[in-house]
Length: 188
Image (cartoon, rainbow, N blue to C red; front, side):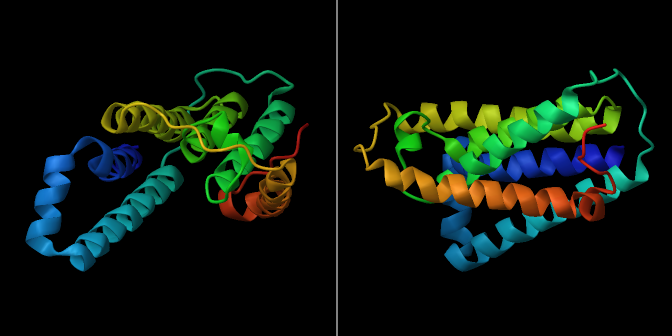
């Protein structure tokens, strides 16, 4: 469990650096240069993912609560929403008129979906930790950037691309989930 906790903490700290640690980030950029800074940033993210993966796989699940019988259905529905939000962050869409941080909202939704479907301690650490990081990041970015300037309205057709891509991404993740996580997301 220690490796899992370290991985979540490293992920959170490194990702929070640009939004919370402006002076430290600026100092590192000045001292190292943009290329080496980005390289170290990427290396730290990869290392955090390795730590989380090793920690997850080496920790025996200890159940803290029993998810309700309908939780997998709800989790799958939330995962569609999470993936649509995640995809919508990268393209112009009307969703950005409603949500300031669709990608982070997608991560928080992903975390909530997994907490709903899993009642063990390692899930609480991984999904709870990443979900808290996403919520804290939204707050830190809002504090750093000030008032939100909503983008102009777009034709409704602009919302189709992230919707379709999110559904396709869900289908792919759903099919690959047993291979990736060792658990089927299928209800029942």
